[in-house]
Figure 1 (cartoon, rainbow, N blue to C red):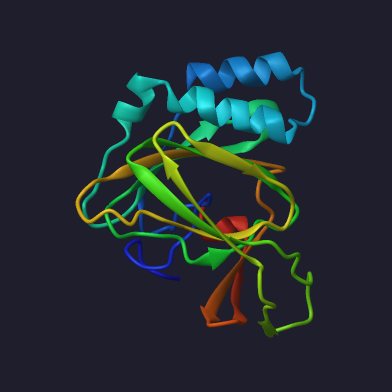
Figure 2: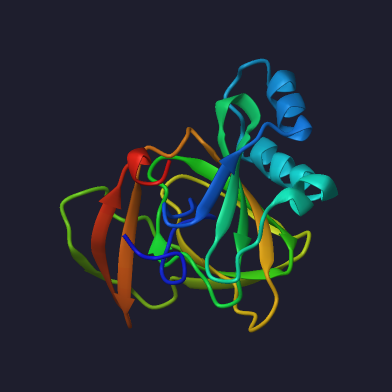
Amino acid sequence: MSSAHSAVPTAGSVPSPSSTSSTVSSSASAASAASSGGAAPTIAELLEFVRRTARNEALIASLPLDPEGRTWIRLDGPGGSEAWLIGWPPGTGTGWHDHADSIGAFTTAAGALKEHSLAVRLPTDGWKTLELTDGVDRSRELATGHGRAFGQNHVHEVLNESEDVHAVSVHAYYPPLPRIRRFSRTGAVLRLEQTESPGDWQ
């Protein structure tokens, strides 16, 4: 498992076990779950949840920030979704990964994040290396208040490229992540490095 300073999960992604964590039930998430009536949340509802939660100044301020590694608080997401408030020290990132069959959304609550993603659906199983075709790379800057949603099997990496400013973000996934596949990349070649289950990060 990578350390909190190098290629570690989240989120858009899940924090690594070496980071500092805690669990809270925010009023925003509790209200959202109640209003969903138990129905599976849609991508739009996950995006609305992370946007609303990112505006909760008291919650954002409650996240302890560590200059050496990412920190997080687990939240109650809408409709039984998995949600996280994550702090990103300067220079940290997730490494390339996907989210299996979960849909998700995330929003930057403070600072800025950058997402690199692949506009391609990877095979589910049975491979170790793939050569990516031209034109599949996407990049976007996510300043404070900006976010995005994504469908199943979304492959990306998320980075705080700042040299001196912490970033904070809110993430939600449904269903709760059944696994995360982690990849390394050299040029156009993507290599499957490991598959993690919830026990690896909770």
